[in-house]
Image 1: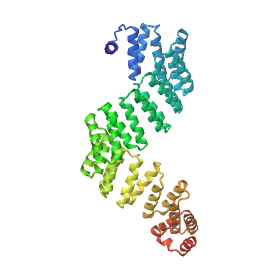
Image 2 (image 1 turned 135 degrees about the vertical axis):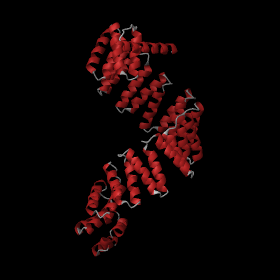
Image 3 (image 1 turned 180 degrees about the horizontal axis):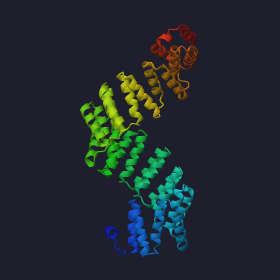
Image 4 (image 1 turned 180 degrees about the vertical axis):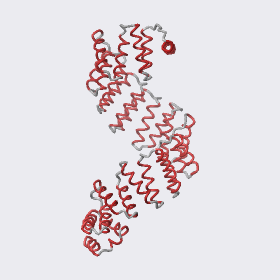
Length: 462
């Protein structure tokens, strides 16, 4: 294997040297195949095309180089050209499984996944590399959202090669999508009976137990994953998450710290460490790790939110505003940032900025009831009664029976002198949830004091 790899590197170096000097050198067909394969796998299609072209100039009858040429055409969506080559090759060698695989690739790219599966199943009858073909079939079933058959084929991959961890992850992905956590655990335990030191399988068992909220069992599974490979960063991260759920924050910190020593720090580990330090009252250390987190990954919204929430919980709204503004400057379309921006400005009594924040939150698709109501209350503070009515009328489209909206619309209409609409929404509110009539008393004392309003409330109570 090492010799083959060394030979490939020599061939690639000679080939690239040839391209620089324009001197045509001779390579045997296998060398050209190896060079083309290297460039295709590296995504360097122009170089792959060059290698195949020169290869066919020197070896015009090479079926494998023609297959690579077809593969490049498929990559470039030149399906007719690829199909012509494959049809010619099929006439010469009808039992070549690679022809069926490439034809299946064409159908897959054209979204005819069932036809692709039919061809791949034909390839499976001809090939010695069953694992690869089963994997391709599994992927086609995933495209069809047929998770049962996808799972079955990825399992067949593992029967051929139990070291194919990509197939193992895909099997568990199918179990997860089908919400078959118990079945996934049974399968993984069966797999572990044959491969007791497979850290990936133990890791996946732990994640299944975590989803089932069986944290002690999850903890044991992650411990076995670490015993199998004491440098498995994913297992330490997941173990830390479990320990947090169990309230064992110092132990969680120990596991997150190990990941920092094994690899470059991840923003996830730094964020979790900040949260753990906050839980144990180590505010300075919490801030230190939150800041390291956003330095490591400035686009991670959870990092900026953690810093903002840290200051908000300690009623330091000026600091919270500073950090949420920094976050918005990085990502101005993050709805979580704008909602916090609105709430913090509301706390600081910066009502125009709060209204802007709530409006932006709605524009970005956050249609939660709280957002509509908060914006309406801010508009009321600003004396923008018409805008508040428009806002709440839009909210009614999402929450047509909500009493909090109805009582606000009642109060606003009475303020505007539109007693008919005021009375209509008051009756709707009393019908939906009379307990929320206090909204009228708190936000609209003048309408609440009207004789007509009092009479309607008393009539409903009686």
